[in-house]
Amino acid sequence: MAGEPQNDCLFCKIVAREVPATIVRESETTLAFRDINPQAPTHVLVIPKAHHRDAAALAAAAPDVAADVLREAGAVAEDEKTADSGYRIVFNTGTGAGQTVWHAHAHVLGGRGLTWPPG
Ligand code: AMP
Ligand code: ZN
Image 1 (cartoon, helix red, strand yellow):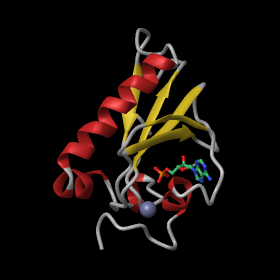
Image 2: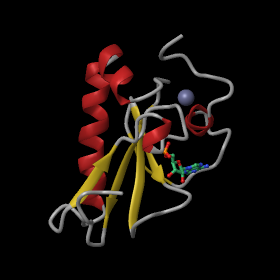
Image 3: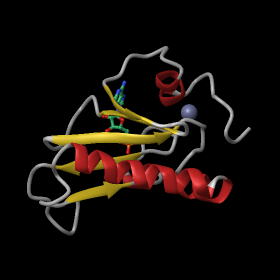
């Protein structure tokens, strides 16, 4: 069921502290931790603690939590001193866009020049 922890979900396991992660921020509804395979000097994932398969499903089911994820993404950028130079918030959605973990997550990328359009 949407929102319930999923036994086979890596990010639900990180929320439950069953899988270790380098956690940089936590709120009542969200968790932020460093990506294990960073693509930029700052590469942090911000997730809702509740399980939703992607950003659109999260926004439909729990718009307040979707807003929490975006606010925390901005706070990560501030914490990492990337807010002034610029950063990117990315939600890969669907296999063709590179989504590999089916628990909604915002990538916060910064600390280097970011080209546009992305690959
Ligand atoms: P995506 O490909 O958009 O679904 O993003 C999933 C991200 O999760 C990738 O950037 C992975 O490097 C990252 N990732 C996978 N396993 C872990 C882990 N155990 N801890 C932190 N990040 C992870
Ligand atoms: Zn999950």
